[in-house]
Image 1 (tube, rainbow, N blue to C red):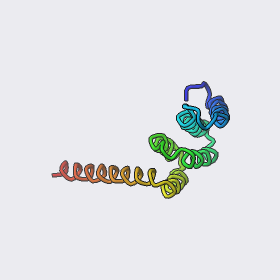
Image 2: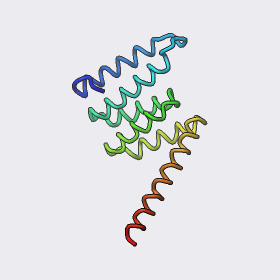
Image 3: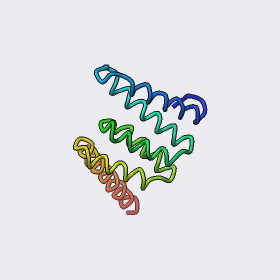
Image 4: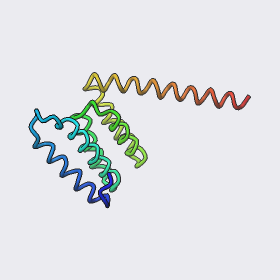
Length: 129
């Protein structure tokens, strides 16, 4: 996030969310600014140790910005590293179930993960021979 301390980053992310919520729906930067603000806020919450609040913010982010799958996956991974994998998965799965585009992207992501897993297993088998 790059705003100094994690706490000041949380404050800056919260302020950014307030700002974008006040933008007119027709504003050309409304959608990208909303995505950026949600992503920054979630990342700042994880970095500052506010994990439960980060899971809640992640849920709002997934609901309001389903097209931001690249950031969803990044934040989901940060929550996993912080020990909140189950909670992040639950939020992500619910969002994917409610949005056909996100659901399709999630299905593709899972296929890639499965393919990567199989390739890694095959490589281990080959190395053992």
